[in-house]
Each structure stands twice: as C-alpha cells, then as structure tokens.
Length: 145
Length: 145
Image (tube, rainbow over the protein chains, first blue to last red):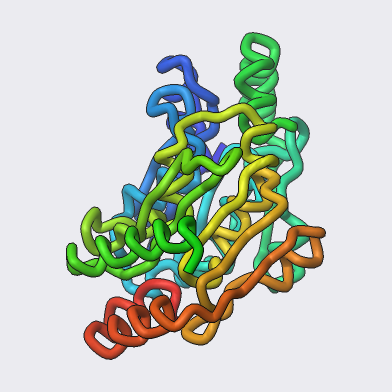
C-alpha cells in the first residue's frame, strides 16, 4: 500500500477502534497530507460526516486551486454525496482503496473527466467486510443500502 | 412565502447576521421541522457546512424512511455536494427559494425522479444578491464559481 492510502487506512482503522464505520480519507497536496479524517456517523451521530467530508473539514477553507491540485485518497468508493463534494471542489484525481463492498458514483466522476483509480487493496476490503459482518444495521443505515 | 420556506429564510438571515453566507435550509417530516440549519463556511471555517448539510446534521441519524418521506426546503438552488446528499438520503421533494443567483444540480435531481420546485422568492433573491455585493470574495470561494 502506498503511504497515502496507508494513512487513509490508518484513519479507517481508527474509526473502527472507536466503534464507527471504518472508512478513512486523506487529501494530499504537493505530496503532503493537508487533511485527513474518517467516517463519524456513530461517534458524532452524524448523517454527513463521511470520511471524505471529514477530511475536507480538516483542511479548513482552502483556495480553490489547492483542491484542484490535490489528490483525494479514500478507502472505499465514494458515495453520491462525497462524489458531489469532490466535484464541487474540482479534484482531478481520486484514489479508491476498494469498490468490492460498495460502488459509489465513480462513473459519474469519470464522466466529468476526473481520474478514479481503484486499488482493490486487500486490507481495505477485509476491514470493511469485517465491519459489515459485525454491524450490518449501521452499515445499512449509512451508505450500504 | 409559506411557513417552511420562511423558516429556511430565517436561517439564511441568521447566517447573514453572523457574517456568513446567507443560505438556509429546513427539513420537514409530517408537517414538522425535524432539522434546520444554515451555511457556516465563515462561522466555522468549514468547506462542507452548506445549509443543507447543516440541516441534515441537525436531524441527527434518522431511519431511511424518514428522509424519504421528508421535504427539503432550501433558499438557494442546491450545489452538487448538497444535491448528492439529497440523492443519498432519498428525498423525493425539494423546494428551492430561488435559482437566479446560482443554479445547482437541479437537472440531475430531476433526472433521478426527484421533484424540484423553484419559487423565485424575492426575499431570497435579494438577500443573496446583497451578500454577493457585500462579500464577493467569500461567495466566489464557496459555490459561486
């Protein structure tokens, strides 16, 4: 796993240790992580704090060109809301840990000219599968339906 | 203005009084407001707390059917991120105060079978225009570009 997907995976694992949905995300500008986060549905009772949204929040308010020049790494294929956030901020390159457990709006992103690489990383696949097995009710309440 | 758009407008006005982007939103289930909020980009240094996201946050974690049975009122046409949130949670009916100052992803929502009514309410139009005149730099940093 490259170091940025490793950092996203570490976020996912931290979420899992907190009892939350194990999806992590980092935003990388000039080979430096400028925002990192994980899904906080359980931890904050939040319907919108997906990993990608959380990482964007951690970036603070950046100038538009910073987002456009950044890569977004997420352990799971981004849902329609997070894909909308990716579109809104003009990211050009998204790296996805896996889309075995969930396929988000990748096709929509690609149709907008955004590069979406899917790694099918075994660690990401296994952690997500483990969570779905352990907490199907939370998964199906979140983006799993 | 009907009472729910009035409540969304009150949220927008509150945001304006706080020095923020004046966009408000309420989520209505069974003729009762279950979540209300406004854009907090300025107030919280947030890139994702648009009015719709903020209102969803205020709802907490609701069962899927609650969102599907709810109407979402927003003073301004919803951007691609907020439209993605609307799609994610399965809202079927969105009422928009105006789309004179900004046209979001209404067509995408309609293509998904979601009803989008645009009221072109004069109060919503004027408040937004006033903010864009007062703070073009914030508006163009947010969804205005």
